[in-house]
Length: 538
Image (cartoon, rainbow, N blue to C red):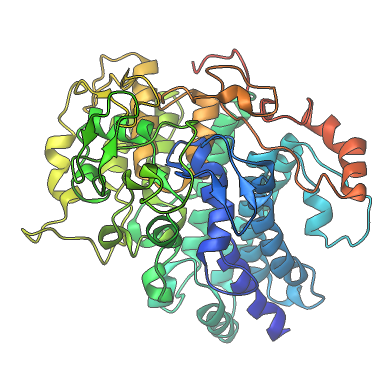
């Protein structure tokens, strides 16, 4: 069974860009994030039209190519291929806590991928079914099954403390060798508390996802999760620690060596409007001259942090010499080298609790308390290797006191230095400072906007929040109608089409159960179960 247990580590890596049993790498990470959710959350933009090695040419920096739609499912398939044999091994029930932990990781990945595509064969994959047909289950079914699993997982892990010491020692040895998504290796896995808090935090996240479609159930799940214990400290965060693994964050190679991603104008506009400390160090200024194609005005190199409008038609080629879009701002490798690959971050849990408290739920504190704690905990850097400037200070930490006192936004207008899009005023009009006199809607916008900033570069949840709340306020996507015909100007991609549609057996399964479970056509404009059109946030 040892080889099956060892495969569980490969599954953990696959959750954040690992492939074929290896640690996270740029290529797999890019298919999972950079060619998908990063674009739809408007964290990133592809600055060139051609991918010569993939033989793909794109016309829009937003809806790029259906060749890349399968990236998130590809990563999930890597996870399930490594993890499902372990969950179904004949001896796994002799180590119930290990099964519970991997069942938690399976459900985490399953919910994540379901939020991208919608229905998929959740149960058939989990039980290691080998032959078609595979039944596509609705998002509602997947969510309910996952939460049922979470409740059982928490009960199992809480019972661990009653086990004999020799049993616990044997399990600790297994975890020390094969469990890399928590910092508990530093304490030798003295208990399983982090996994309990992780499970409950996932339940809290899922509760907030369904707040529009089933507010009563959302409230119950959220309150149960908080009562049972969620992540409350840095030491309880769940991630693949790149520094400990001896790797750089994959986003750096995609940005610096491959020139496959640049930050968006929307992302910059939020940071500019709120004078966020990230502008001082996390992103580089334009590293080359940019010429306006209409006026011939030149924006000199090193002028400012400048983003690209989502949906623009970028230039051709991956070198600045032939494509000036490559000169737009990218992430700073010195500051971001050791960014962890997060699964669940303290700041996210704080903002979830802030939103819950705003809705009148019992979250163990006030919306203001959790909102402010979330901002303070929002830094994307390694907790033990913060970037320091010439004054030996971390700009994020040093700038927080002033940042959090801003009562209103700073006026900002984005001006495209290429001239390819018109100037546009920032849509961010809120401040940062919490004000009890604000309406619930303004308070929610503040919470989600700060959650968006704190979540970078984890784009899956940012995209979920954008779809379910409409926040943060982002620039309209240019050329949105160039997708599959289901989007109009002002629309966003709300899901990706079912992957594997060219396979006849998969196509038959989609027709038999997939479309019915989806409840709409297989288009990017079709809303998922929790993404309810016309329902207000309050």
